[in-house]
Length: 245
Image (cartoon, rainbow, N blue to C red; front, side, top):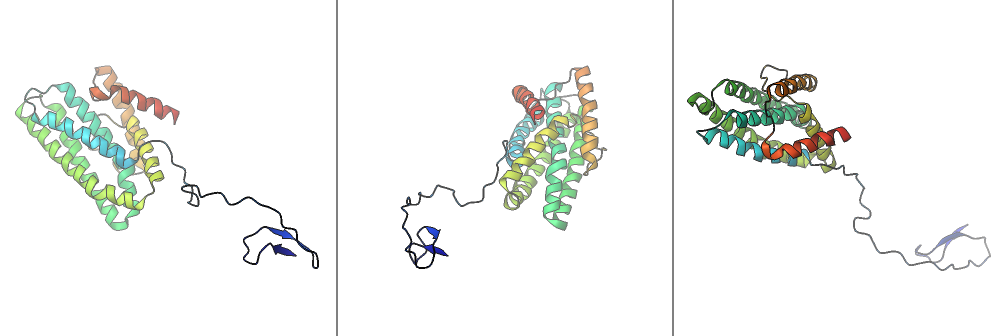
């Protein structure tokens, strides 16, 4: 029969037979609790969360847009770098941020995603027109200011609406996984604005990668610079990291 040393059940369990006195075996006292012990373990992948990654890019894009709209002696190269950075950023959000919002929040999320895609198309149209204007001219400055205004609206929508909602509904591990996917998507994304391209999943993941490959060939052939000067090293690191993943 199964017995225990004391009636409270806090001793050592062992088998004994009726009429036989059980032997008490010494045992070590319980170990102290380890911080976090008893909680469900969750693997945390390396990388930034999608919120941290995109919010950081929002800050960089805001600076670039301000320089572009406020300078009277702007050159083509800074405009090209900003155009490429914003185009990659918006492409990755259409691939992962907007679909996640639409999936999590039913009809309201679908409306938000649809509206953001519409605003993205407007931003890309303005960027495409910006590339045709002479830097420093009045038309260029007006378009740069329109892009800056559209970017600020986009940032406000993300950081006051979509980001807090994702933080409440998605685990940190999944936010980091999404961040890693965003980084990979940006490596393959277009570097030139294509407002007429497909913008809804799942097709945009295929078309953006194909268009991005063509854009990269055109950029290399023309010598066009597509990364902010301060992030050349980080861009190279991202490519290496993407290959490792």
